[in-house]
Image (tube, rainbow, N blue to C red; front, top):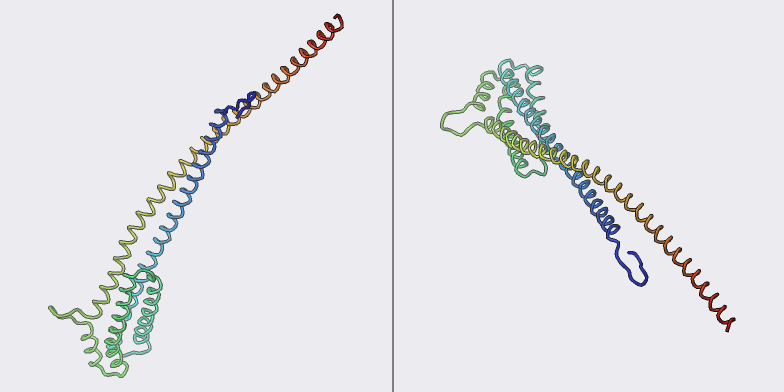
Length: 261
């Protein structure tokens, strides 16, 4: 505001410049927040993507360990060599159990996947009981009995329920399939947030240029305001000096007239 005697009037140039600066600052803060939020969302999507890869890898490891264990058991019932094929069978089967427990930790917080992993553990234990009959027969050198047990545990007849091993493979495949679908969704989300972060960064760069130009403009306005204030003060001082001179002249003339009379 500028005081002009008793009248107070608003300086629209300075007020408008201040308002423009405030708006620019608020927009800048909003853009910075949007860029930070987009980057955080992108990092979360990438973290979820890495988690999906970890789950898929562990599932594949479980399937591989079970397959190697069953293949070793098939050799074990034939050669009945506990130190080689028997050890390979047992170690891979125990490794599969460890990997399933790893899988339980990885899917914690996802109810659907937790349910699937719980089913996998149940099928794993049931399958282990079926294979244990063949392994025990081989360890006791029962010959054909071990082969019969192994064949019975793996054989499927058309029109009858699927074997435990087939159910286990299917459940593991379902976990992988669900994770792949989740991976596709997360990849799309990651790409979206990456594009948004890049776009906001571009906007922020342009806004920085605009704010810089605005700062120059405000500087010019401030300089002009200072100059105007200096001119106004000079005018006031000149007016005061003229008034003082005029007052002195009137006083002297009055004194002369008084002395003449």
